[in-house]
Length: 173
Image 1: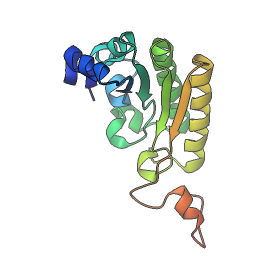
Image 2: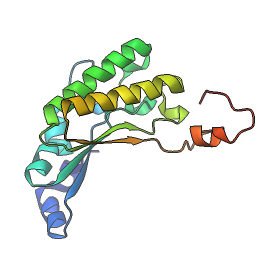
Image 3: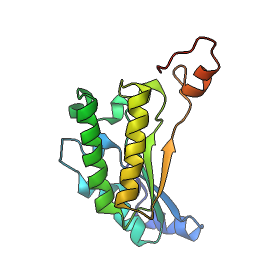
């Protein structure tokens, strides 16, 4: 997801000439903070392209601040309990939004939030509370930003909406 490195300045110029003005920056946790409290700012700034795309006038959306899918979470996060995870999410969002609030105006707070494979093995109540708290934190740090919650249908099993139609549904994923 190193978009800027993939197309470079000349590719971006062609996109602008064709009328493109919106850029989604991949800020996946395992790549943006691969070790606890160690951020790869150079990668986000330059390889992903947050700084050059913003300077060129593109509207920039961060995708996603949180995605609790195992392949996108750093190893240190995988074994944390709810309290530890909530604290780490706060720190992670705080660092990214504080650094990029002037370049990014749209934050996808959580990706595929309500399907079990992207739950980090936490229950729905925890993921819902984490999502609400995270949206609130983004708005506290960047009051003029647009936030989105990508609560896509689960492709791997029953999701919240389909579960509601089951006669004997329970409150798990």
